[in-house]
Image (cartoon, rainbow, N blue to C red; front, side):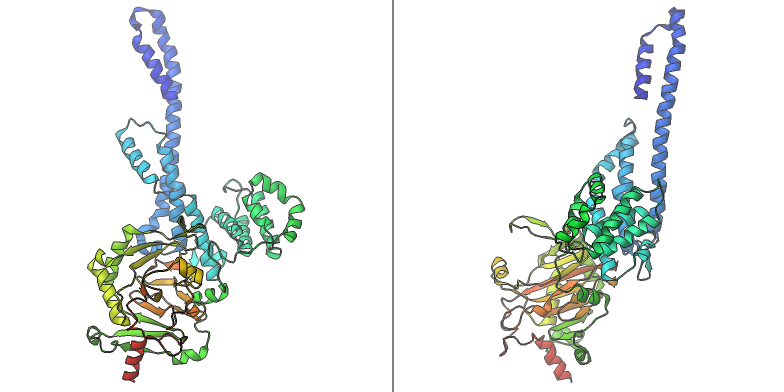
Length: 533
């Protein structure tokens, strides 16, 4: 606007013949008096915008300074992951908006604006911020962490480079309320109020206090759907509603199905799953533990394993679950990650009408599928699995590579359909997924275990190792003891690969037992072990 005044004045001046009239020469003073303040206002406005831009640049430099120390270590911490998402969702978005206000006659501004316009489509959105807060809550709940420790960036002794702000505490508290985690909501909102400074937060103390009242009351009166009504209300309506006694009465009249976790499927026994994730409970039957062994196997004298036998660690005998060590080399793992990274997409599932594919909110991971034809290393993995297990893998699926996100997990589930209805929907000419070969493509310092809830065991993710089990009894009936889930990643960058083996072509490798519900034995491994005894 100010520049427009200056330009218009100059245009008018350009048409005048100043020397031929003293009156017009006098007008020069009037024009100067108009132009100079306008120009000064324009400069002041741009200086203010530059100051705002400089402040954001300094802030971003400060927050980013710790990244250069160790990039892998930085992104391994959930608090740092959250801050990185927040930095793009907030700071970089503000920077992009400020750049739009500058005069685009500058070649530099045109270039940088074009870069930002293209990059802005990839910036994290509100959905990513929500996912980040849910990830922090998942880690807190599963590993029984205090909110005060998380605020300081402390997860099991692993510290982040940045702490959580007062606004972050408030945001996490509201996310906890939406998930029905009322105790956690109280914890986070109280922290937000303790750290609250007037004028320095995006929320008011009054609103935070109202959220705290709701969460505290809900802890003892959680059987109510009114909570969901309150969360969805506009702030003004929520304030008016919570100030009446009516909402307390509604708490007692209506029923509310309390969510034990944030954005996950229903789990039969959350506490058992959490204990297994923490490594507190390793076996449901302690007598089994004494019978478990570690040994070397050549899989009945397989020539490829004679020089370098596979290392076997028994995790459970009933059901039979083992962990093979040093299955893949770092070279092969790096090649698999390289092939998978450009293909990663968010885990999806069928919608309510079984036709529309939607993001799976309970599965915090991105996936890629690799065919044997995608590279020689992929085909070598299939061959390696066949050598170790003794199965043909003629009808096995492609390798599914997964990279987990903030607090990434996959709640307990079965790898096969467990009801007749599910079998009909997922029927395949290659038969059921009789076995799963789960490969760990990275180490995870804290969390990320694979927990078998009904079997009472969990496997620690060790780079290059693999967990193997049968999903069905010899009769083909589902083995419900294989109910398992991927625990939230508390610290680390988890990569894993799944190879599901179908039953077609395996009838001569995995023979039936007289007892249709006999434990599924990893037969060849057992015979080798007995022969070596």
